[in-house]
Image (cartoon, rainbow, N blue to C red; front, side, top):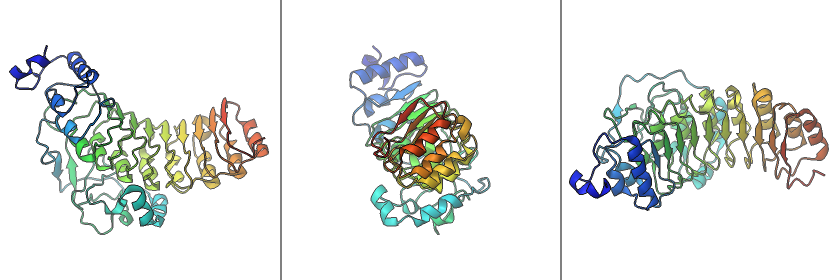
Length: 389
């Protein structure tokens, strides 16, 4: 009935509709495959409890721009600031060296551009206490959190991200589901604002998102679950932009193959992380795992197909505080570990699930000794391990 009356409402639903009514309208549009940039625009004055576009085809930046009450011609929330406070510098030496050693050609082939020469992206302070700072056209934040080896000699200025003063359609949104929106870019994400009540964000398979767009999540203090699985162009910049969110408990970066050790260093303040997915992030090294020592509450870690994580990395990981008592799930499928690495696993007394699928360099005897110490283990995958009899 409301949708039929749109011509009399100037094409926009009135302010003040009950949220459950608005959510029903949105779900009806999705069910009838009628949701697009035009129909989203009619909800611009309403409050959405859930924005789920994962089942919609052809989601583009224009879809999210339609929800914004302001013009998309210029980003209204980027405000120059001369008095921006930043915290002390992060200790990123462990992450800096592997990144500097990475061939620029290798990283360009993987991500289409290097992290240090992204002309259309921005970098946010990993230690910003309220709003991160952004780069615009090579004007990069003056945050000490980002090493000079990454920023080079680029001009530095600070831009502050301010949420819209007026109420928006996403003021009460708790779930943002954009999975599979392959044509959605950072530009589209930047149209979202006022996400202060957001609790769950799912951006899996958003292949065109690189990094800058995740700054919209920087003012979401309730965000506890963020899934970025298979965002294959996602760079370290994206992780830096959300690295101050201590509310996060689950972070999935599985399949984000441009992620490096720099991202792990940026996660150092996420003390409440329980689940961390890094499978197929094959630029991560043993050195980068040292940065996880402050994440003592981790209960699940996925490192499958991380080709540079070997015995030394397993030794580092298992010796970190909290691992013996808290870590319950560890996935190491196809990692190049040997019997030496397996012996360190014996120290994980609380481990319940262990995935060693395809670890072809391990053998039965060392694994058996380690298993004797894992009294809580209920699931073990050693398929495609020819040395296990």
